[in-house]
Length: 417
Ligand SMILES: Cc1cc2nc3c(=O)[nH]c(=O)nc-3n(C[C@H](O)[C@H](O)[C@H](O)COP(=O)(O)OP(=O)(O)OC[C@H]3O[C@@H](n4cnc5c(N)ncnc54)[C@H](O)[C@@H]3O)c2cc1C
Picture 1 (cartoon, rainbow, N blue to C red):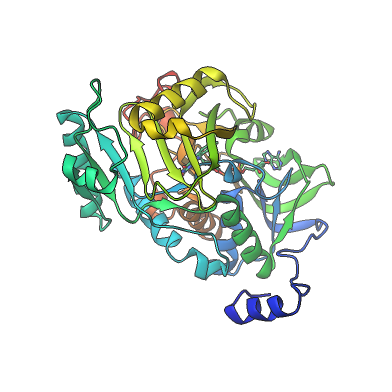
Picture 2: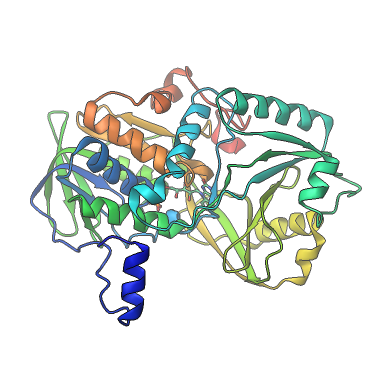
């Protein structure tokens, strides 16, 4: 069933009784051409582009929980293409272009809103860094505007500009950046893949990977064995565990990242704002809640909730930047599991096992990557070749040291994130 203005009118006039489920709930078949382990944003977008771009539809997405229940439905929804390093910048630039036609491609309203992102800077050194980043963004065809103090005041008059510790010098404005409704992105891709024949199988945990003579043969699941010509492990925060099923130790640590939302307020923040000194960022959802977050909790864990010291840190940073939020009540907070790589950049690559593909290491930035990652992983599965914008996301860079993409300057060491 396709969404259209006519369909909405028709359903509205007939009591909304005629809507059909967004995707089927098939039983798993005994064999597929491709099995995707993990029904998060990246697994679903991979299935979608496999079917749409390459006509490969004998595909199953196996999800141990429900669609949208992982990090794809837990993030703070920021979508941007303001990366700087070769290897990352062209990938995120491609991903943003896919975002811009995602709703047409999937015929689903993902509430993608290009409201603009402003990264604040608070020193001459930071200004230089952002000017360089902006120039890099412009040179690859993306948008960037360097704002001075007056330029930021015009757009964000509610900030405390004259903090004694970190006065605001200006900001890097990325007008095409913004937000989207996170779980709608998962639903849209699930629906689009299902419409093209992909089986989306929820409540189906992969418990083992069948490998014979160095070649993948299929998976063991809570709903029985499934044979496959190719298997893609796309399990985000659980990647170390699923890779271990194939005998691999991968350079990924799982860390908690928290998010917070306030009670619903009238519209007051119409951009995404990041605070360059306090690791705090904020936007306002369409329901009115202020959605904000900060840094990792800084200890490895598979828990989906964080601890109070980081909550305190984030709220303090928020109060420093925009004291007005002190009047809002906090509604809830939650955590997600981040698959952190040493250089902060992801992995989309073949593994030593023939037919087994690995997609992981998205750190705290994998939501914006969902379309690009799916596209590039589908390309790798369909052609056996690396898709050019993602060609740098190699697994062996952590062994050889060649091709590291240390976007945040944290170094190629886990404990520096
Ligand atoms: C608080 C928070 C804020 C964030 N903010 C942003 C942001 O603003 N912008 C941004 O770009 N990114 C952000 N991120 C990061 C982003 O959410 C993740 O990088 C991204 O969602 C991870 O990819 P995914 O969607 O495929 O993961 P998931 O949705 O976690 O998908 C992985 C799936 O694999 C399934 N799985 C695991 N093991 C198995 C198994 N054995 N068998 C079957 N299924 C299995 C899981 O159940 C899960 O559904 C944020 C994350 C968090 C937690």
